[in-house]
Amino acid sequence: MSRMTAARTPSTSPADRPRLSLRERKKIKTREAIRAATYSLIGEQGYDATTIDQIAERAEVSPSTVFRYFPTKEDIVLTDEYDPLILEEIRARPAGEPWFETMRYVLHRAVEFGMTNDLAVSRLRTHLMVQVPAVRSRMMESMSATGRMLCQAIGERTGRDPESLEVRVYAMSLIGGLMETSMYWAENDHRDDFAALVDRTLDVMEHGLPNENR
Image (cartoon, rainbow, N blue to C red; front, side, top):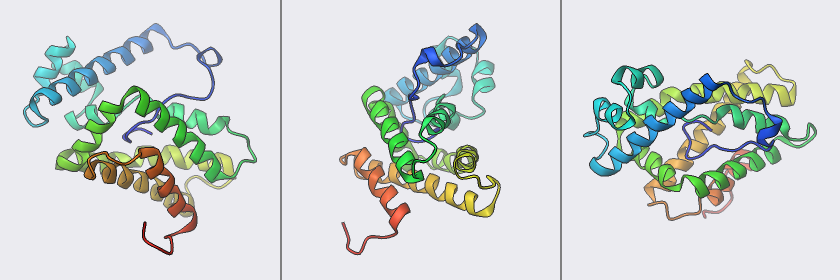
């Protein structure tokens, strides 16, 4: 999901989805270039020392272009292209499948793809969430967008009003739990298997606290 450690790849093949226009492909390419430049610079000199002007120069765009795509430097680190694909993945699951089975499947797909293709970026993102207050604060602010997306998916699957208090509380509990999972992973030097941590998170969401400490 956006702003998580990784949120990738839909279950449907590229041929099954509408082809993006040239304009949309160029926009995605520009955003990816800005993100790649940002990650590279942060790796070289740290987060605070990295400026928008430096990012723009390395990405070969203007500073105004950077700001047009990302309102803040924190947004460059935290956002990705994949929230709509996660929603697509949820919608592709069988209608009668229990909700938690759907979430386990979707999140395992996301983690598998992200850990395989963007492990360094996932580690960098979560490290910055823990170490940089501005990134953590922006993460808290931006969680509402992912929460709204999840509310919509829950509403479609369960027939509930996506704006109801119950759905909103449930969705944000899950989003908050996954954020804490990401931070726990980083705080423990990324030693744990992230997929196993996600499973533990979903277990708590589904069954409550276990009777014994892990």
